[in-house]
Amino acid sequence: MRIQVSRTGGFAGIARRGEVDTAGRPDAAEWETLAEAALASGRDGPTAGVPDGFRYRITVGDRAVDCADPRLTEAQRTLISRVLKEGA
Amino acid sequence: MQPRPNNGLRPVFCTIVPPHVLDKLSQADDPLLADPARRTLEADAARRHHRRVTALAWTPQAARTSAAVPSKPHRTLYDCRHGTDLPGHRVRDEGDEPTRDASVNRAYAGLGATFDLLLTEYGRSSIDGKGLPLIGSVHYDERYNNAFFDGEQMVFGDGDGEIFLDFTLAIDVIAHELAHGLTQYTANLAYEGQSGALNESVSDVFGSLVKQYSLGQSADQGDWLIGEGLLAPRVSGVALRSMKAPGTAYDDDVLGKDPQPASMDDYVETEDDNGGVHINSGIPNRAFHLLATALGGNAWERAGRIWFDVLTGGELAQDASFTDFAKLTVAAARHRFGEGDEAEAVLKAWSEVGVPTR
Image 1 (cartoon, rainbow over the protein chains, first blue to last red):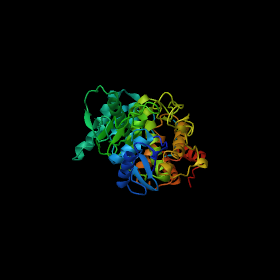
Image 2 (tube, rainbow over the protein chains, first blue to last red; image 1 turned 60 degrees about the horizontal axis):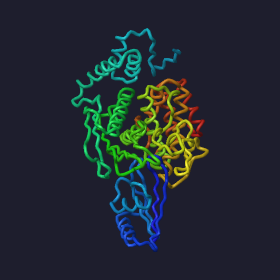
Image 3 (cartoon, helix red, strand yellow; image 1 turned 90 degrees about the horizontal axis):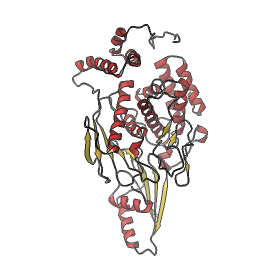
Image 4 (cartoon, chains in turn purple, orange; image 1 turned 180 degrees about the vertical axis):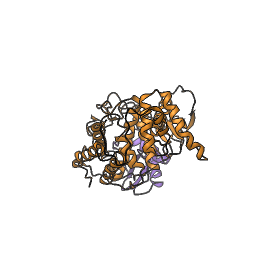
């Protein structure tokens, strides 16, 4: 399962991208559960967001959801910070 | 002082006007009369005098209205303690002594400086004009490389120390966030495309004005940089954005290169960042810098006043384009200052960045 996170916006407007391929990973199941949970609460299309807030697109396989700070679900926040290796 | 055509649009003040006349005028209802008088008095006297004048000016209004408009800020600072619940734990109220947390104290000071500029120079009490309490939270999340305004309050991260430092370190960042609130309560520019880039630019403009105001800098003394002091030592750059030279603030192997355009020739069409609101803001940013430095003196007095008039004048549409905004700045300059240096400099500034004004 390929998990991609892209982040745009933010005060500095700097885009960041990260990707994880769970194939062959010992913690694959954990990643996949987290990814499903992150997708479950999101929706396609642009989200409201807040001025200078980060905006994220989480892509899992061929499904994607958009979400934005500060209204992330716990699953989204955890997944994003793990994939980007940065606070979300 | 140069003689001006007397269309009744701008009263002429010579230095021979005695203080007691200026005092009376500074209490007038009409800001066109009161503002210049108040500024003249301030320029002559000490801070103590300014407080007396402000108090006198506000007293008649307080007596007339049942709910007096506050002339002091009401700030509350919170500590998120590296979590993401907002607002977090309350740590400093208005009037409280500084705490041991420098982030809290910097945010408190920055909010106060923004309130001061808005009230003293533009007669506006807080972001809604009615003394709206100012709320800020620091230490949001862990190693969080950002600050934002969530519609009700400001939120500041600590940075990760590798790319960014604590976001409260830069007073212009604090004022930038608060200015999003000002925009929300006035023109409410939609945060996407050109109106979003204008929204961003207005915040950078007020960020710079508050910084220069707090440092007592005139337009030619200001650095016109946004987020100077925020970049971690290893980052190759001077700031996050440059209003005087968009596109030159940083060039780093991790951060990339500052993507801002300096004119419409290089306008960036993108889906990212709500249509590049933090990118294309470089164009109106540069226009403001050109205007402020062409006019000279303090940037908040004429250039800032024109921008403020447009933002709060009621004619700026939520989905305004750069051209819509530019046209209004020309009209505002003429309305506020007549047909002279100011309007001419406004036209020239927009022309240089390639935004049409007709």
